[in-house]
Amino acid sequence: MELNYYTEQRPWGQFKILLENENCKVKEIIVKPGQRLSYQRHQKRDEHWCITEGQAIVTLDDKELFVKAGSSLDILKNSKHRVFNTGNSNLVFIEIQTGSYFGEGDIERFCDDYNRV
Image (cartoon, rainbow, N blue to C red; front, side, top):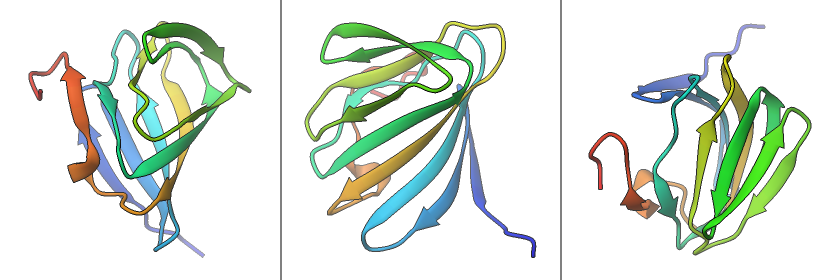
């Protein structure tokens, strides 16, 4: 059986939606080498990240954490966060969102390399 997932390209890489229902949203996120996502927070969802390939520095509420394949972390509502791929290959992680709203409208950006603030 072939599964068709929704994929969206971004300047830093791409994400693929693996599952979406009223209880959760699951994405595979791929970040290109040397790229990073916005420093952001969400008010209506928590996120759990599981790193499956690569290495990165995650900034979580102004503290830097080194992560690599096999690492996981929880990002609670209202926590500022971003990920920076410090490696020479793609960073891949699974993001599981839980909460009351999973849309892009719940992103509050504080800093962004692509002028999306």
